[in-house]
Image 1 (tube, rainbow, N blue to C red):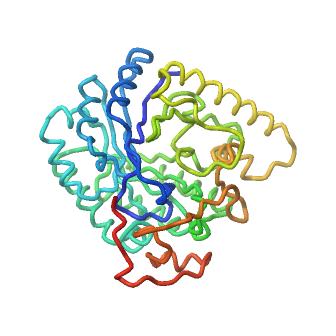
Image 2: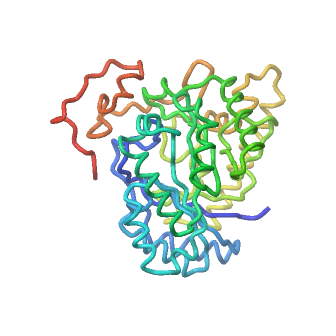
Amino acid sequence: MALQRLTFHVTDRCQLNCDHCLRDPETKAKDLDLSLIESVLDQAKALFESTHVGLTGGEPALHPRFYEIVDAIVDRGYTWHVVSNGERFDRMLQRLEERPARLQGLKMLNFSLDGATPETHDAIREQGSFRSVMQAVSLCRARSIPFLLQITLNARNVDEIEEIALLAGQLGADKLAYNFTQPTGTFLDAALHLPASEWKRAMDRINRVRDVFKVSVIHSEVGPHEEPFHMCEMWRQEHLHVDPSGNLNLCCQHAGIPNAGPLSDIAGNLHEMSLGQAHREFTKIVHHTIEARLELLAEPGLNEWDKHFSCNWCLKRFGKPHWTEEGVAGPNAMRARWRGRWTPGYKESHLRSGALHLPVLSSDDRSDGAE
């Protein structure tokens, strides 16, 4: 067992309005402190001899000091990857090329692509965002920069599993990742929900894609697993995640979403304790979670969600929104105040959700929601 990577959720800022986004638009976006990132990088190198860092968001490049973060990573001998929506990637690439070490340390660009067609992708994310990803991919191809395409599967795009693989092959992607949508706790979940049987059928199709297509195919931990006792990379302690507030928490699936239960997924705030101290607390959380999982599996008559969807069960255990056969359970994340791009009715998909009767906003009502 080895710590394979650190992941920093560097910012909650984003230009897009994705229906499956977990971020609460009611709260002001947070940016992870550069000084904290530098400190954690130094501690991880000393403690674990870590070598790789992932950057996620939001859109990481919107962090005001994003390129200083990249420099802090490469100057300490780490390699890195970043998850991006592809918006204005030409600007990002220009800044990365200003210092060769930035690109030399870059192992992968992960672009989010939630449909094989502009119609599907843009409806889930934002109008014009499919084109942005295609432009970003073209720039990567022209410069031989490795890239991964990742689709977050849900009821609105699950029919395009094979088509997205064909597209990834045509675009020359180095990898294709299938992620599974987790519930946001908002009215939009109704249009994203799939029963357990459909998730398992989707996994079967993904496995067939893996057997047939040349592109390397991976999938997230969130989906179904054949073995009821599945040890995710967090439980194996191969991956540590730092949220935008500087908390070392259980994983990115737990970060920043409603919590209605007595259990906390946060091991500690790295502004207040060392990485080693927080990691010890993290180990305790993992230990208790594994114990609870084993106790559950000893019970007779488990439903599919509890038996074969261990990540969904983990969200449930910590009082987070989670899938059931009927839809979503757990705390409600309906916002007290939505604004701009996050206002109900701003997108056609809001109206189609069937969960709420929402007014269509006029163009005068639609601010861009930027912060």
